[in-house]
Length: 77
Image (tube, rainbow, N blue to C red):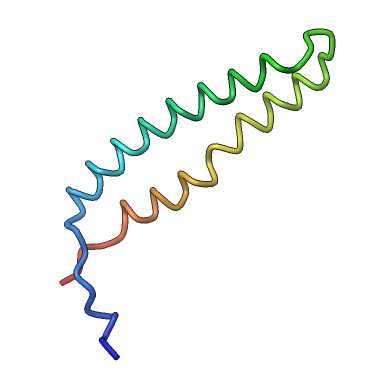
């Protein structure tokens, strides 16, 4: 079985570049999807819209957390 502890990583500088590109693409797609979903909610329901804004404003953080952890991981020595 191969030793996974010596797995080669990308340099942090390259991971940050890739991560920032992925983050920009992710946020653009997420925003477009959230706006499209919001248009499906009837404008009469203020509380439903408020709940959607709160949920949509927090939900994007979950996948970004893993991306940021990967970007900030120390370089292999």
